[in-house]
Amino acid sequence: MTLRRLPAVGLILPLVLLAGWQLSASAQLPPPSEVIAALGELGRRGELWHHLAISTQRVLIGFAAGSALGLALGGLVGLSRTASAALSPTVQAIRAVPSLAWVPLLLLWLGIGETPKIVLVAIGAFFPVYTTVSAALSHIDPHLVEVGRAYGRSGIHLLASILFPAATPAILSGLRLGLAQGWLFLVAAELIASSMGLGFLLIDSQNTGRTDVMLLAIILLAVLGKLSDTALGLGEHRLLASWSRV
Image (cartoon, rainbow, N blue to C red; front, side):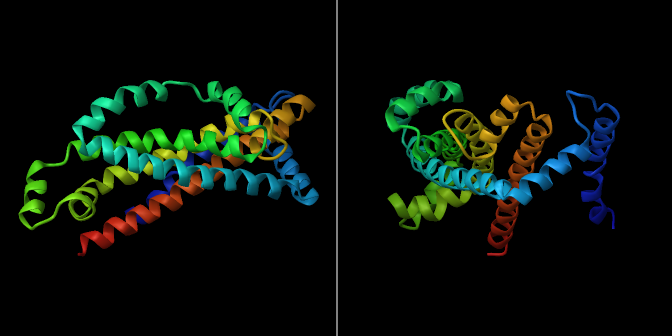
Protein backbone atom coordinates (compact mmCIF):
# COMPACT_ATOMS: atom_id res chain seq x y z
CA MET A 1 0.00 0.00 0.00
CA THR A 2 2.82 2.36 0.89
CA LEU A 3 4.65 1.68 -2.38
CA ARG A 4 1.49 2.35 -4.40
CA ARG A 5 1.18 5.73 -2.77
CA LEU A 6 4.75 6.78 -3.50
CA PRO A 7 4.08 8.14 -7.04
CA ALA A 8 1.48 10.51 -5.56
CA VAL A 9 4.16 11.96 -3.27
CA GLY A 10 5.95 13.23 -6.37
CA LEU A 11 2.95 15.44 -7.14
CA ILE A 12 3.32 17.45 -3.94
CA LEU A 13 6.21 19.63 -5.08
CA PRO A 14 4.67 20.43 -8.54
CA LEU A 15 1.42 21.44 -6.83
CA VAL A 16 3.29 23.65 -4.36
CA LEU A 17 5.20 25.26 -7.23
CA LEU A 18 1.96 25.77 -9.14
CA ALA A 19 0.37 27.47 -6.13
CA GLY A 20 3.44 29.68 -5.68
CA TRP A 21 3.36 30.53 -9.37
CA GLN A 22 -0.29 31.57 -9.16
CA LEU A 23 0.37 33.75 -6.10
CA SER A 24 3.43 35.44 -7.57
CA ALA A 25 1.98 36.07 -11.03
CA SER A 26 2.79 39.46 -12.53
CA ALA A 27 3.28 41.14 -15.90
CA GLN A 28 6.56 39.25 -16.35
CA LEU A 29 5.12 36.00 -14.99
CA PRO A 30 1.58 35.37 -16.27
CA PRO A 31 -0.64 33.09 -14.15
CA PRO A 32 -1.21 29.43 -15.05
CA SER A 33 -4.62 30.27 -16.48
CA GLU A 34 -3.02 32.41 -19.22
CA VAL A 35 -0.57 29.65 -20.09
CA ILE A 36 -3.46 27.18 -20.37
CA ALA A 37 -5.27 29.69 -22.59
CA ALA A 38 -2.16 29.92 -24.80
CA LEU A 39 -2.15 26.13 -25.01
CA GLY A 40 -5.76 26.18 -26.23
CA GLU A 41 -5.03 28.98 -28.68
CA LEU A 42 -2.10 27.19 -30.31
CA GLY A 43 -4.02 23.94 -30.31
CA ARG A 44 -7.01 25.45 -32.10
CA ARG A 45 -4.74 27.00 -34.74
CA GLY A 46 -3.05 23.64 -35.27
CA GLU A 47 0.42 25.07 -34.62
CA LEU A 48 1.06 23.28 -31.34
CA TRP A 49 1.00 19.76 -32.77
CA HIS A 50 3.42 20.72 -35.54
CA HIS A 51 5.87 22.13 -33.00
CA LEU A 52 5.55 19.05 -30.78
CA ALA A 53 5.86 16.61 -33.67
CA ILE A 54 8.91 18.22 -35.28
CA SER A 55 10.79 18.57 -31.99
CA THR A 56 10.04 14.98 -31.01
CA GLN A 57 11.09 13.74 -34.44
CA ARG A 58 14.39 15.61 -34.25
CA VAL A 59 15.16 14.23 -30.82
CA LEU A 60 14.30 10.62 -31.68
CA ILE A 61 16.33 10.57 -34.91
CA GLY A 62 19.28 12.39 -33.36
CA PHE A 63 19.19 10.23 -30.23
CA ALA A 64 19.12 7.02 -32.29
CA ALA A 65 22.12 8.12 -34.36
CA GLY A 66 24.12 9.55 -31.45
CA SER A 67 23.50 6.62 -29.10
CA ALA A 68 24.38 4.07 -31.80
CA LEU A 69 27.69 5.83 -32.42
CA GLY A 70 28.25 6.15 -28.66
CA LEU A 71 27.67 2.42 -28.16
CA ALA A 72 30.06 1.52 -30.98
CA LEU A 73 32.89 3.88 -30.05
CA GLY A 74 32.37 3.41 -26.31
CA GLY A 75 32.56 -0.34 -26.78
CA LEU A 76 35.79 -0.03 -28.75
CA VAL A 77 37.42 2.28 -26.20
CA GLY A 78 36.19 0.21 -23.25
CA LEU A 79 37.56 -3.04 -24.62
CA SER A 80 40.84 -1.89 -26.15
CA ARG A 81 43.57 -0.11 -24.24
CA THR A 82 45.15 0.93 -27.52
CA ALA A 83 41.89 2.50 -28.74
CA SER A 84 41.40 4.16 -25.37
CA ALA A 85 44.86 5.72 -25.44
CA ALA A 86 44.40 6.89 -29.04
CA LEU A 87 40.82 8.15 -28.93
CA SER A 88 39.79 8.97 -25.37
CA PRO A 89 41.78 12.22 -24.87
CA THR A 90 40.44 13.73 -28.10
CA VAL A 91 36.85 12.66 -27.48
CA GLN A 92 36.94 14.04 -23.94
CA ALA A 93 38.29 17.35 -25.24
CA ILE A 94 35.53 17.60 -27.85
CA ARG A 95 33.00 16.79 -25.14
CA ALA A 96 33.87 20.06 -23.38
CA VAL A 97 32.67 22.15 -26.37
CA PRO A 98 29.39 23.94 -25.42
CA SER A 99 26.31 23.08 -27.44
CA LEU A 100 25.89 26.60 -28.89
CA ALA A 101 29.49 26.56 -30.14
CA TRP A 102 28.54 23.82 -32.63
CA VAL A 103 25.69 25.81 -34.17
CA PRO A 104 27.60 28.20 -36.51
CA LEU A 105 29.89 25.40 -37.69
CA LEU A 106 27.01 23.04 -38.46
CA LEU A 107 25.12 25.81 -40.24
CA LEU A 108 28.20 26.52 -42.34
CA TRP A 109 28.74 22.86 -43.22
CA LEU A 110 25.18 21.58 -43.50
CA GLY A 111 23.01 24.61 -44.25
CA ILE A 112 19.80 25.57 -42.46
CA GLY A 113 17.67 22.47 -43.09
CA GLU A 114 16.88 19.60 -40.76
CA THR A 115 20.30 17.97 -40.94
CA PRO A 116 22.26 20.36 -38.66
CA LYS A 117 19.53 20.21 -36.01
CA ILE A 118 19.51 16.42 -35.97
CA VAL A 119 23.32 16.30 -35.98
CA LEU A 120 23.44 18.64 -32.98
CA VAL A 121 21.00 16.42 -31.07
CA ALA A 122 23.13 13.40 -32.03
CA ILE A 123 26.22 15.13 -30.66
CA GLY A 124 24.41 15.76 -27.40
CA ALA A 125 23.24 12.14 -27.11
CA PHE A 126 26.60 10.67 -28.10
CA PHE A 127 28.77 11.77 -25.18
CA PRO A 128 26.80 10.38 -22.20
CA VAL A 129 26.37 7.04 -23.98
CA TYR A 130 30.02 6.89 -25.02
CA THR A 131 31.25 7.76 -21.52
CA THR A 132 29.07 5.28 -19.65
CA VAL A 133 29.67 2.42 -22.09
CA SER A 134 33.44 2.85 -22.19
CA ALA A 135 33.64 3.16 -18.39
CA ALA A 136 31.34 0.18 -17.77
CA LEU A 137 33.20 -2.14 -20.14
CA SER A 138 36.62 -1.12 -18.86
CA HIS A 139 35.58 -1.99 -15.27
CA ILE A 140 34.03 -5.39 -15.92
CA ASP A 141 35.29 -8.14 -13.61
CA PRO A 142 38.18 -9.89 -15.42
CA HIS A 143 36.93 -13.23 -14.07
CA LEU A 144 33.85 -12.91 -16.30
CA VAL A 145 36.08 -12.55 -19.32
CA GLU A 146 38.09 -15.58 -18.27
CA VAL A 147 34.93 -17.66 -17.85
CA GLY A 148 33.71 -16.60 -21.27
CA ARG A 149 36.98 -17.50 -22.91
CA ALA A 150 37.03 -20.83 -21.06
CA TYR A 151 33.76 -21.63 -22.82
CA GLY A 152 35.24 -20.76 -26.18
CA ARG A 153 33.85 -17.25 -26.49
CA SER A 154 35.96 -14.57 -28.17
CA GLY A 155 35.60 -11.40 -30.21
CA ILE A 156 32.00 -10.47 -31.05
CA HIS A 157 30.61 -13.56 -29.30
CA LEU A 158 32.39 -12.65 -26.06
CA LEU A 159 31.19 -9.07 -26.36
CA ALA A 160 27.56 -10.00 -27.06
CA SER A 161 27.17 -12.85 -24.56
CA ILE A 162 29.34 -11.73 -21.62
CA LEU A 163 30.55 -8.15 -21.70
CA PHE A 164 27.53 -6.18 -22.87
CA PRO A 165 25.07 -8.09 -20.61
CA ALA A 166 27.34 -7.43 -17.62
CA ALA A 167 27.45 -3.73 -18.46
CA THR A 168 23.75 -3.44 -19.36
CA PRO A 169 22.58 -1.47 -16.26
CA ALA A 170 25.26 1.17 -16.83
CA ILE A 171 24.58 1.25 -20.57
CA LEU A 172 20.85 1.79 -20.02
CA SER A 173 21.60 4.61 -17.58
CA GLY A 174 23.84 6.15 -20.23
CA LEU A 175 21.05 5.94 -22.79
CA ARG A 176 18.72 7.81 -20.46
CA LEU A 177 21.36 10.47 -19.89
CA GLY A 178 21.90 10.69 -23.64
CA LEU A 179 18.19 11.19 -24.23
CA ALA A 180 18.06 14.00 -21.67
CA GLN A 181 21.13 15.61 -23.24
CA GLY A 182 19.51 15.29 -26.65
CA TRP A 183 16.59 17.43 -25.47
CA LEU A 184 19.00 20.05 -24.14
CA PHE A 185 20.88 20.22 -27.44
CA LEU A 186 17.57 20.35 -29.34
CA VAL A 187 16.77 23.72 -27.79
CA ALA A 188 20.16 25.06 -28.87
CA ALA A 189 19.50 23.80 -32.41
CA GLU A 190 16.01 25.28 -32.63
CA LEU A 191 16.92 28.65 -31.19
CA ILE A 192 18.81 29.48 -34.38
CA ALA A 193 17.76 29.11 -38.03
CA SER A 194 14.50 27.32 -37.29
CA SER A 195 10.89 28.02 -38.18
CA MET A 196 9.31 25.08 -36.31
CA GLY A 197 9.72 23.34 -32.99
CA LEU A 198 9.54 24.23 -29.32
CA GLY A 199 12.90 26.02 -29.37
CA PHE A 200 11.63 28.24 -32.17
CA LEU A 201 8.46 28.83 -30.16
CA LEU A 202 10.63 30.03 -27.27
CA ILE A 203 12.58 32.61 -29.28
CA ASP A 204 9.51 33.71 -31.27
CA SER A 205 7.49 34.31 -28.10
CA GLN A 206 10.39 36.33 -26.69
CA ASN A 207 10.44 38.53 -29.81
CA THR A 208 6.68 39.07 -29.67
CA GLY A 209 6.50 39.58 -25.90
CA ARG A 210 4.28 36.52 -25.36
CA THR A 211 5.53 35.35 -21.97
CA ASP A 212 2.56 32.98 -21.70
CA VAL A 213 3.68 31.14 -24.85
CA MET A 214 7.29 31.23 -23.63
CA LEU A 215 6.33 29.53 -20.35
CA LEU A 216 4.17 27.07 -22.28
CA ALA A 217 7.13 26.07 -24.46
CA ILE A 218 9.32 25.55 -21.38
CA ILE A 219 6.65 23.41 -19.70
CA LEU A 220 6.13 21.34 -22.85
CA LEU A 221 9.87 20.70 -23.11
CA ALA A 222 9.89 19.52 -19.50
CA VAL A 223 6.86 17.28 -20.06
CA LEU A 224 8.22 15.73 -23.26
CA GLY A 225 11.59 15.15 -21.64
CA LYS A 226 9.95 13.47 -18.66
CA LEU A 227 7.64 11.33 -20.80
CA SER A 228 10.48 10.12 -23.02
CA ASP A 229 12.65 9.36 -19.98
CA THR A 230 9.77 7.47 -18.35
CA ALA A 231 9.22 5.40 -21.50
CA LEU A 232 12.91 4.53 -21.66
CA GLY A 233 12.90 3.78 -17.93
CA LEU A 234 10.00 1.35 -18.34
CA GLY A 235 11.88 -0.38 -21.14
CA GLU A 236 14.95 -0.58 -18.92
CA HIS A 237 12.94 -2.06 -16.05
CA ARG A 238 11.32 -4.71 -18.26
CA LEU A 239 14.61 -5.67 -19.89
CA LEU A 240 16.41 -6.07 -16.57
CA ALA A 241 13.46 -7.96 -15.09
CA SER A 242 13.35 -10.39 -18.03
CA TRP A 243 17.09 -10.99 -17.77
CA SER A 244 16.87 -11.61 -14.04
CA ARG A 245 14.42 -14.47 -14.72
CA VAL A 246 16.77 -16.13 -17.20
